[in-house]
Every structure is written in C-alpha cells, then in structure tokens.
Length: 319
Ligand code: HEM
Ligand SMILES: *[C@@H]1O[C@H](CO)[C@@H](O)[C@H](O)[C@H]1NC(C)=O
Ligand SMILES: *[C@@H]1O[C@H](CO)[C@@H](O)[C@H](O)[C@H]1NC(C)=O
Image (tube, rainbow, N blue to C red):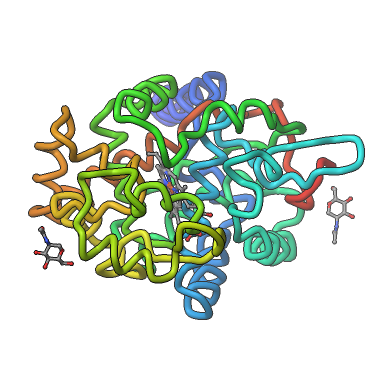
C-alpha cells in the first residue's frame, strides 16, 4: 500500500513525460534543469539590443517568421553560406534584407557561457522574437522549447514558401494555409508589420501609381524618399503612425488605405479579411490576444526534436 501510494503518482508523471518526449513535442520547461537561466539571458540581451536600436525587435521577429516558414522552426535561416553550401540567407526574401544575425550570435555566446551545448539556436530565436515584441509594447506568450537545429537549409524552399510584397489576398491565404495557418491567423500575424522598416524597392510599385486603393497624401509622403527610380534600399516605416510601438495602428492604416505593401492593403480591399481588419483596428486587445496565439502556433511548425538535428554551438554553421 505504502509502495503503491508513493510510487503510483511517480509512475504517472514518468509515463506522461515519456509520452511527451516520444511524440516529439515541445514543452515550456524543457531547459528548466539543464539551463534554468536561458530565458533571463535572452530577455536581457534583447533588452540591450532593442534599447540600442528599437528596430531590432522587428528584425528578430521577421527572422523567426522566415525561419519557421521554411521547413519549420529549425534555425536554418541562421546558417551562413559557404563555398560548398548555399542556404537561406542568400534567398530572395532574405538577401540584403534579413537582419539581426549578430544579435542572435551575441545571445548564443552568452547562453553557451552559461550552459554549454544545451540550448538550440532555433529556441533562442523563438525566445528572442517573443521578447522583442514585448519590449516594444506588444503582448507576450509562453514559448514552448526543445527545438533542435537543422544540419541543412533550403534556398529553394525559402524562395517558394515566403510571401512577397506584391502577393494577392488569395496567394497570402494559400501560402499560410500550406503551413496549416488559417486566414484569420494570417491576418493576425501580418500585424507584425506594426513595427519595423522596409526598403523602397518593396513598395515602390504601390506608391507610384501601381495601386488605386491608396491614400493620396500617404503616397505623396512615401514618394519623397522612394522615387520612381533609384533609392531602392531607402527605408520607410511599415507603420506610418508608430513604427517602434507594437500596437494595432497597422490595421488602422489599412482601413485608411495607408498599407505600405500591396500585400498589406490586400487584407482590406473588399475581401474576406475586411471585417477582421476592422475589428483589430478598433480592438487592440483582441489583436494582441490573437497575435500571441498565432505566434505560439507559428513556433510549433515542424520542429526537429529529440535525436533529430543537433544543438549547434555556433548558429552560423553546423557542428
Ligand atoms: C503576410 C505576408 C508577408 C509579406 C508579403 C511580408 C513582406 C515583408 C517585406 C517585403 C518586408 C520588408 C523587408 C525589407 O525591406 O528588407 C517585411 C518586413 C517585416 N516583416 Fe513581413 N511580410 C509578411 C508577413 C510577416 C509576418 C507573418 C511577420 C512576423 C510574424 C512579419 C514581420 C516583419 C517585420 C517585423 C518586418 C520589419 C523588419 C525590420 O525592420 O527589419 N512579416 N515583410
Ligand atoms: C562545449 O561543448 C562542446 C561539445 O560538447 C565542446 O566541444 C566544447 O569544447 C565546449 N566548450 C566549452 C567552452 O566548454
Ligand atoms: C489620408 O490619411 C490622412 C492621415 O495620414 C487623413 O488625414 C486623410 O483623411 C486621409 N485621406 C483620405 C481620403 O482618406
């Protein structure tokens, strides 16, 4: 009796833990014994990076999206090209555009100093993205951990799986649906464009006559630094109202036809997402809650777990 009453609960817990591990799932407490301070380390490094340059919160968030959408959240975007390997960094959607790799390196070296060869680059990126959003005034969520790092990357998948700024609503919906994310999740995740900057080359068409559903005074302002020719890499805030504040102004912009990318404005152009955009534009709390839920789902895309992949020692190269 004594044996049963003391052993049975232990057995149940053990079986539960085994079941979780066996199904390759992520868990919030994955590093609680092996690297208990990892979340504190990532958080304070991100606080420093964002204090130095607020845009970094946006850049890291985008890196995470581009990691997860290409064969899952496996740190593949962090691998440098080598003479014998062409990865995702040089893919169309990332080349001369994805940024923040040095911040991930800094965090990784601090995490390595505390817990050698334990925490994956993929998990560091997931935590850093969450912290960047929070630091800019956005919501927070629990990041489940235990992702392992890919030993390879796919430039062709990066080129074909990531949506471009000229995408139509139906293309956006189908590209997210290919990843198991509904149109509603797509519209919520697009609210990430409430922070960060974009290069002229990605929105020139829309502001110089390509789109009719654009606020004329907004277009005129953007044309000042994004002319018809030249200035391809000139930057503009994606959210004209509050580019370093994670709020719902992105949706207010869409309702006022001040979306920066053609793809942004597609979410409010007489189609299926109009009512949701209107809702988010007036209900910041609803947007924040849906965004947090969608980010958790984005972070669960096809992780490598258990003995798959590896824990990279340097995020830029395989061990
Ligand atoms: C829905 C389809 C999407 C398209 C077509 C798209 C496209 C783009 C483009 C073209 C840029 C500008 C890059 C540059 O100028 O170098 C950008 C920036 C950005 N994107 Fe997206 N994106 C999409 C969805 C997302 C999602 C789901 C997230 C995150 C959850 C995200 C987060 C960001 C952030 C934060 C920036 C600013 C980055 C910075 O300032 O460094 N985007 N996006
Ligand atoms: C960290 O661990 C790796 C692999 O176990 C080992 O090669 C490396 O020497 C260790 N580094 C330090 C600083 O302990
Ligand atoms: C265009 O946007 C500005 C704010 O930037 C707003 O004051 C104006 O009313 C808008 N114009 C139209 C036609 O919606």
